[in-house]
Image 1 (spheres, one colour):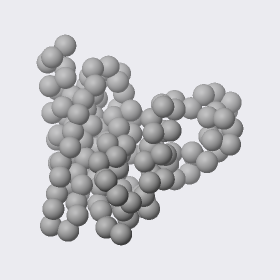
Image 2 (tube, rainbow, N blue to C red):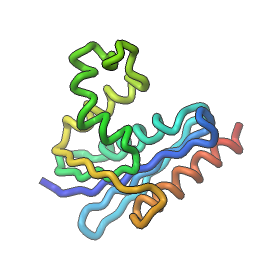
Image 3 (cartoon, helix red, strand yellow):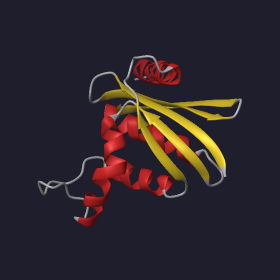
Image 4 (cartoon, rainbow, N blue to C red):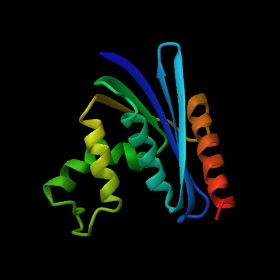
Length: 147
């Protein structure tokens, strides 16, 4: 199985507001950058979208190390999601899970691969995370200009 590194980030100008997501996929010496935007969204949705798009770009089952600066995404997919599914997509306080549509999509993508999740501090020393931040912010700004 191919070993892939996926680094992700999301950005939002206002929360909610115009948003952007970005990811870097690495396989050996190869790197692919991807990004996109939405007109009216939240930072958490863009963080989720970056992981969904990155995993979805892989055409075969891979071992993927996903690096994110979002504890919401990392904890959600590795810990909280199991309880949410057991409770019919309700949180422990019996309120609906926010961003359910994207959690379902991310869960489906994760199940296509063998994934390991790592958290990195945002805006720190992780070069690919910084690059994702730059691309996601640029995408959000471009979306903002087109409104």
